[in-house]
Image: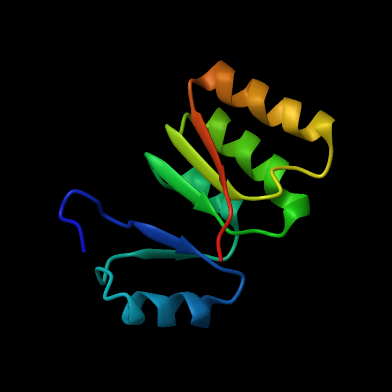
Length: 106
């Protein structure tokens, strides 16, 4: 629990799972829940977004987040399904000034 960080929203296709995570991690009761990441990006002012999505959605999610001006965007590897997708993700982040982080989660 870090007082400098506030989780303002969760997005999960299964709303009940999102509610369980709010309880499990003792998040604030006002934490918003979304079932679609695009709606979350449209409705929230986020500094950081962490995407845990199927690989085929990485490019679209990162590009959407970059266009919204989110400062830090993170996705799991693989970054993209093609070099073309990866280039588009990098270009969108450069254009917006977003930092893109690719990591491996075990």
